[in-house]
Length: 207
Image (tube, rainbow, N blue to C red; front, side):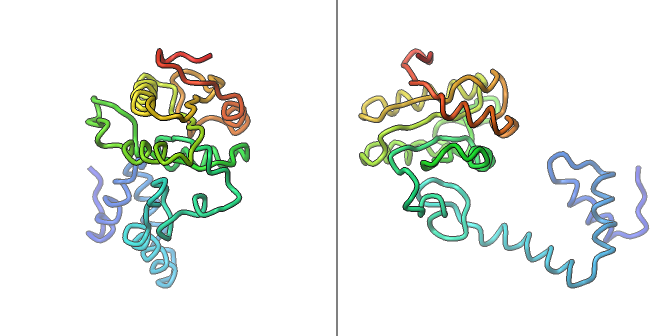
């Protein structure tokens, strides 16, 4: 067991180690690096973390993170408001935006249906998506979820919730390999998948 010369250092290491993918050795390296900073730099870092947790908002339209009530994408009048891309999380928004191929709006579910992880439909931002479809402003909804069994289950659930509307429902082309996470796809593949999306059918198959 690692012995620390300072309880304060140990506390800092334990906190850094709470981050996903960060082991104790990496956490120690982070903490020792912070010790090399000036007090002003450390305060800036601490304030940034505190502001992230206490001041960041979620867009009331799409649930993306933002600094105001409505995110920059939803507020952009040059975006195509008739097309809404449904994604699992904020990282997926960033990934798709990085392709430069999509110019519509987004809807962040906040996860996918996964009973093993305790995530059901009521835990996701699906009701607000239905309301957006029922409002008549959206003409097409693109399901851009990860090509996993959980992603396909969520796709089918959303399709059933939206089938009473007149909205076209499409799904990104399977240029994304089955089982892949959206955020890890390269920009060219992801961009082509968005462009070559196909219509989603009740059977869960595409045409």
